[in-house]
Length: 124
Length: 124
Length: 124
Length: 124
Image (spheres, each protein chain N blue to C red):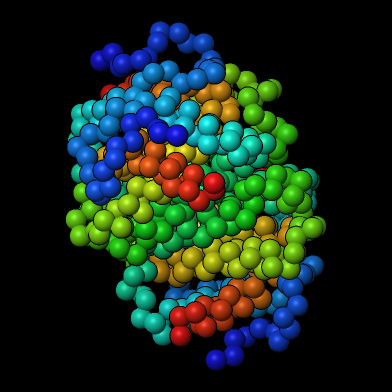
């Protein structure tokens, strides 16, 4: 299966902006992966929340002993492998956020934009 | 400022699929919000990771005392307010995932699809 | 009920070492509090784990926007209220660690010392 | 080095109550381990908080796909290895809670008992 938006290059991920894939396309890619393996039966909201924490823990592990100076914006001094590890772990967190929204019938992009509006009202 | 994809309805969020907004549009909405408040100076990777954990904690709080039976897929029995609270907290987690990717120059949607491919290789 | 080891002073908590209360006394204080409220029925391992994450999130929130320089060892520059907030949230995390060990029949202090020995073997 | 309270038996950890080791003894065991390796320089509050999240994630991973029924109080059906894995991960979380309190000069057992009193006032 060729996924939408997946380029052929294997160069380290660097970007000024994200590529144009929609969150709905990510949801579909994730849902297809889960359905093919019949893992849907395990994907209750609480199990997905616990799994999300596991992946958040792995993001934090990549940042824990560096100090602020060793993890500046843009990640200067990080190797390509370290950068890819962070990209992978952030993707894992995202996959559980997307999946949690999916199984709870939440329109995640709409909820996001709505929350930005709430934050604008809260921090004018 | 009118955000892309934000509908006028205030009905509870329910969906079979996500609306079409791209992750890049969410990144831009988030970046604009941050820039207007000059909060970029605080958004180091480690600070964003800690903030992400705070929001993950709030997702978990909404699920902690219900048991699996009280948090089934589709959230039967949840009020509109409870459903909106979960949508808000998931959005907050997503906002820090997006922001972390943004400040570390990671193309999040591409990284996500790449990780799905890795997972296909790992779980054939 | 007068709890063991609770001194009368209300001065900010500062210490070079911990007071002598055992972890077993903390377990008992926590168990008594839970039993009096008949909350035991809610304290399944997964629910306690989710609750622990909620409290960990609150610890992280106290540290998230300070940068390393604003949260040095000893917490110089922190007010008594800020210091007490951190003490409270760390206590909340500890209470769920203790409670999780209690409901899963794990001898937490023995497990801790055993793990230190494992770590000595791993990092000689 | 023979640690206080560490029994010789290698049977799976099971207990109705914790052994008598104090939290101060655990703090000392942890501090000695850290000092011997000169790791104190890395143990800032924020780095320890991120490390704590990593260990919390590992606790959650052990519970994530079981459902409530597969992780009942007392852990019926768990093997000795699974039980030991949970004991190890809970110990790791505890070690960072203890270490965070240590480097921030918080008397953890006193803070704990004080927080129980606050909770009694909040939930009478």
